[in-house]
Image (cartoon, rainbow, N blue to C red; front, side, top):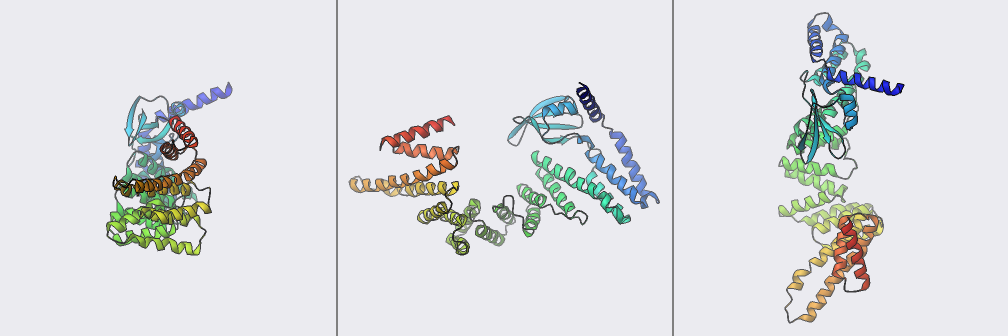
Length: 435
């Protein structure tokens, strides 16, 4: 009971503190700091500038100091009190419950019942984070011994200020501000005092700039990231895909082709890279088969690398060279029997090769029944080759709906061939309906 009373008392104190944000008091502190730096003696002291940094950071963050992403509705009520109003609002493709408070609006994800982002309504000072940062730098300029003292404060500006603002802005669909905040977080991370380059912030600054169609900024940060050796997490070639979009936006066809070729050679298993490169070559009238040596050169150095065989299969598949695609996917599946993608793509390629036979079969004259039956038999045999690969893929990923639907459809096609085919159709049909 004592602990319960203490907890209620504490929550009441926090709620009261939040509700009574002293805006005017903070503004007076800001005005006093402005006067202090103009004072001949006070303005020459490092302590004056450290104090200024602290005040401006507090003013910039105070309105939402007690809010955090992932805060549950019960915690929000306990810490912040009851909202003055609630409403539903759609942002992007998601609908949120909006809890309205005097200084901010909370956007609560309906399914999770937790704060996804918020919009601050009360702005005590403009550019507070930047002013705080410059104040700390001035303190160090006056007295270098202050560096270690203000380092944690600069890290707070970076993480609790700019990175958080970037995350919130992105969630709210304000991409320009999100990219700008991530960029600023990166710039602070490479400050000699911090000297811990935040590659993730630079990556997102570039990525979101593409979304915002600010391609010069995207180029600046994504090329920086590439120079630092960061290629995404996991490193699967996504950086090359983003750089392709960047150069495409800048209409730089030379860089666009080069980055795609480099990406395909390094990450042949990234399907987007090979698809886009094939499209680029075919749309410009070039021979897309020049891609094949890119991966073959990698295979020459590592012939048992199933990822390279899989990537080569993707290229052949995009070129509709089904025979070689099947050989490559088959080799990848042989080298790594537990790889879902190899078995799945091998099955799909058998199906595509079968479907490519249809125009020829449909063109056979009515009086050539024997030839028609022969070709139809080849078509059906090709479809049946997909079954063991799909069954293996289903074993590896039992809940994959695409695999289940393909198995259901193919077994339906051959349900009259044998009781086993009918039984398998019924099995996957029931499974499909249950999903």
